[in-house]
Length: 75
Image 1 (cartoon, rainbow, N blue to C red):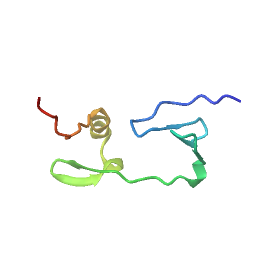
Image 2: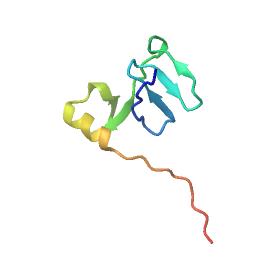
Image 3: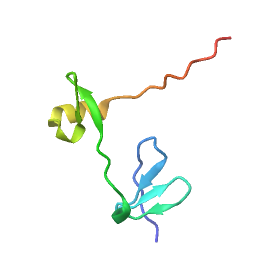
Image 4: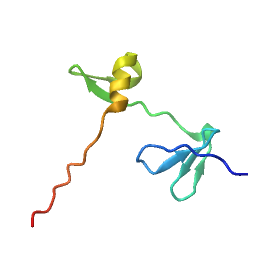
């Protein structure tokens, strides 16, 4: 049976409809074995769990872009 997968963030995994984690190499981690990670970020000078932010701030967090600080070689 073919399962439709939704695209995930750039962490090289996908999630199927049942909530199972499907890693890039095909490994499947069942939903019941997964553990939620608490994400902290800085807002108005304080570090707080993102889950405790109001809806507007959570939307801003979702829109944030991350950048690599890898130096670029000069020619």
